[in-house]
Length: 260
Image (cartoon, rainbow, N blue to C red; front, side, top):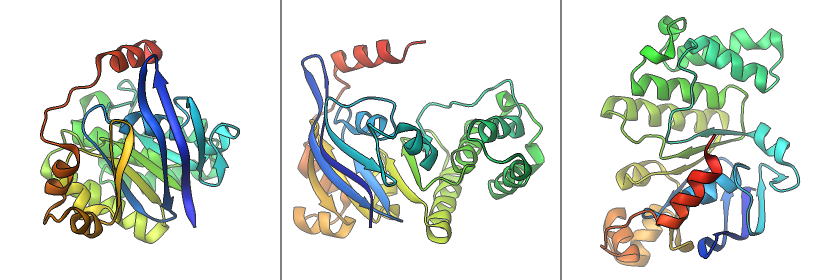
């Protein structure tokens, strides 16, 4: 069963086509890596899948719901962790999670139990009443994991979520995600520039560049198709060795769109 189905998905920002008729699917219970250089279309695709951006064309089905016609149902079925921290620094860890529980209409009788279980899972039970502003980056990321899973989503989206984490936190992060994937069947869709991370954790991978998907498959299949022995070598063979920068017009459009 495919829990994410994307067909001919397109997104343009003025004259720039950031995502160009992309089609792919993700099986239920998969850990799926969506890889590409800067400006390849990864984050734009995730923003469309999570209802943050509207597409220029194409269709998306996430968790059994049409992303364009059933946005509220999609939002209820997914958890999202973006690269930038999105916690309220003036609240405690517990308060951040409680606010999320209210927002997602988790029954009042279940909130305390769920929050305390997740805080225990991420090793922060003893810091639940501390203000988030005093947490390290790794601790904040653990709270965001708990928040993303609090409403029992079918799918967890991670956009560069491990960027800047130390080795210990990153190891905890992936051990925990692999556990909930195995035990609870949560589908994980992630982007990263750390190809070792993708090769170790992803069951399937798609590599996108210039808005188009270049290849899909397991890490082993991708290495075999490209006649390489590591995912990094396969990635470079497909996308080239030139240093990439985020296209200026794309950055300007995104900045204006999300400025508050």
